[in-house]
Length: 239
Length: 239
Image (cartoon, rainbow over all chains, first blue to last red; front, side):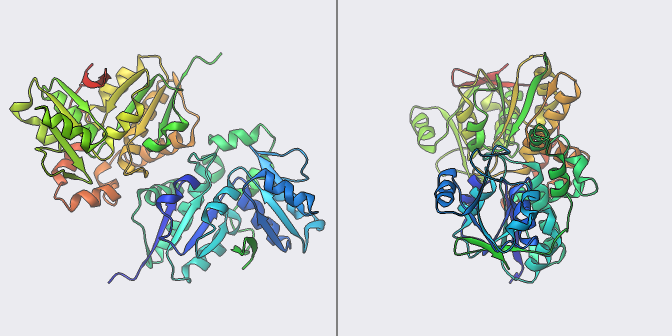
């Protein structure tokens, strides 16, 4: 009997239905920028984040007096104070606070995955921490990439490939899906120069138009924090 | 004004809706084995192939006396004489004939793409021919991979990556989608040893169980024919 656990990669929230229910742990990834911002927020002492899929829900929370961030298509939604730039969350005022967040892709992934036994958040920022944590859980793992409006994206896939590569190399995990093999190959060819590799990626181009180069550089720099955000009763908290 | 045309890659028939309508030419790819079998069939003198998405439709044609092939999950459907092995179509009896075909993934892609201005069929078998033909069309091109039951697959993506790489290198085509960038990278890392590269792919494993290694070797060997099958009024014919 093969006691190894599965590590697989799902490219978009929409495809999650083909993977649903088979993995105890879902790792949600939205490198540019939701899950990077979430990791940065916890690293900077935020208490909890309530992810919501729609701007309407975010507005409801705003009316109730919550601190609310909202991003759509790479920009802060009008009427909200912050979006998904990791730097927004480094301010003193966020320490110990609970905030609400909705983003184009990342909070959508969190929403589709919410029924899974365990949902955690990964980015390059907490890559090492998440890999080591997953290694000792002895559970089947699915990396859920957020993509871009239900299309495949490169940066989430490479991050998922890094996690897959790490877990497979422990000898305790196997993969069977072609998406996982592809993610691993893409990571292996990108790992020595992630920033250069992603230069031509669609989302990088999109963000460049908004002068978000500092955000991108930060989000693509691995291992800046050990925090692992986990979803508990609809709220993200530090594990 | 940028006069270059687009070459992009769509990983699955289901994702086609995000690309639909923007490309004059759709190149349908199902390396293992539908589009390889179709190329082999035309190379061996078949007159036309009517692709149908369902086994029910295939049965209707069978009742009317047509030669009908049907494959599901890698095997010939009971009651039909052949499936999607390229070798089936090399028999003398197929020359000059019209046949009907339904397969798990490939005929589904042909079905979703049928409204496009031009739909052609590619595989490794006619790779060079299709690349050179596309190069001179001066039209936007979408490679539609058939995947495996709406999930990403590696062999179709690598074939699409080969076409993308060729067209981009002519200088007359550009790509913007991350799926195209990924397909190109995967092709570049696979091209020197496609058979080895795909050793661990999910579909290879699936087919190995049915002793289809000869089929796989044949389907992964580039440039065995110059035929380009094209969809005309619901039938595939030689261009």
